[in-house]
Image 1 (cartoon, rainbow, N blue to C red):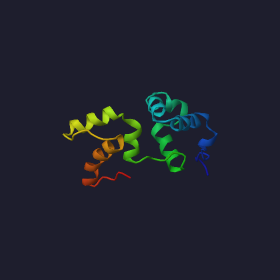
Image 2 (image 1 turned 30 degrees about the vertical axis):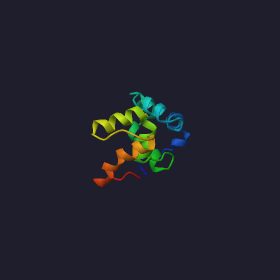
Image 3 (image 1 turned 60 degrees about the horizontal axis):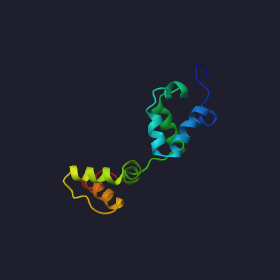
Image 4 (image 1 turned 135 degrees about the vertical axis):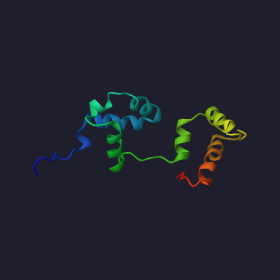
Length: 112
């Protein structure tokens, strides 16, 4: 068809594979690299578009709120969040995460 681009396959793009490998190495690596302003230039598309494409094709999977809190926050930070919300910080990391997720569930937000 005139004017249409051939379908892009991210599997053949070394930049897209590098982005995917950052997520495979864990959240710290992905967070650090996602703040790099040069991703759009290297990928040939905006970073959010590349991530959405990887999500749509099943190469990346979103995590639920509990998993995000577990990977992103230390016990000390979770306790600080609970203390800021007037809840007593006590228990294992999983207990702290559950306590933080309870208000979200009460207000109808999906935590899964």
